[in-house]
Image (cartoon, one colour):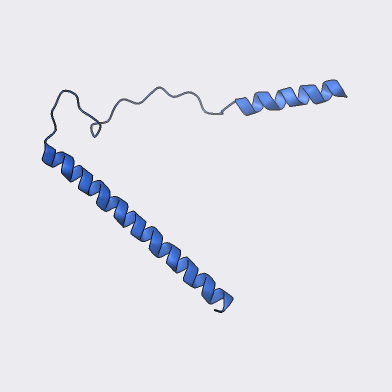
Length: 80
């Protein structure tokens, strides 16, 4: 009985260690990443930063509106 339990546990550990996905080679750097051979103008850096902040603010606003909407619908369902 102990051997069966030990074998079962070892088999489960072996299965858990298998990821199921083959290892992927690292992807080459994209063009939007840091470029060592070309200098980037400060205006372009600022534009990217502002675009990133604007996108993040829009996503945060949408998430907040969705949360408020969900809360309102839950309160209506409860009857408050």
